[in-house]
Structures are given as C-alpha cells and as structure tokens.
Image (cartoon, rainbow, N blue to C red; front, side, top):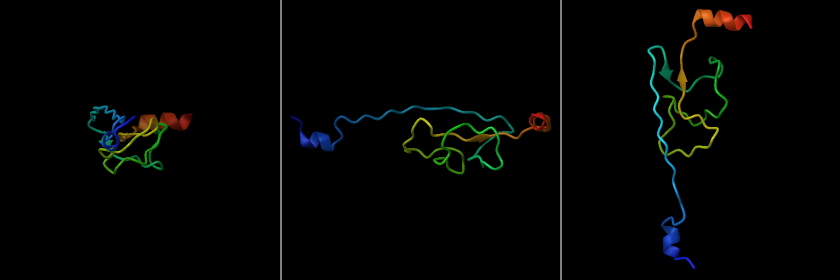
Length: 85
C-alpha cells in the first residue's frame, strides 16, 4: 500500500549527478564541432551541445551523448601525415 501524495511528490525517484572538469590549451576552444570541417570526432551524439560546445544544464543525457565539445587546430605536419595514410 502506497500513499498517493508520496508518489505525486516523487517517491521512488532518484537523480544522479556527476561533475566534469575540462581545461583549454591556448590553441583549443569549446565549440560544437562542425562534422564537415572536423576530423577525429569521437563516436557519439553531438546534438545536445550548444554553440558554446557545452551541454545545457538540466539536459537528460545517455551514455552516447557528448557533453563537451572541444576542438584544436591541426598542424601542417599532422595534415601531411594524414594525407600519406
């Protein structure tokens, strides 16, 4: 037997929070990476990222959601190496 008002107030519900910390190197920036201009993107869903590259507070996420988007320019040496492969 359960009390209806307890159920209405959220009885048996739980919320899980986890915090993440990320720092930027001088050449890097937080942004939602453009799939056409970006290589090396991780497997996952980028749809929940804002233009600033960070997911909105309070957004429900699953295991495949990307929560921070960070990009860095590729040096000419790295481009040459990728072209040779």
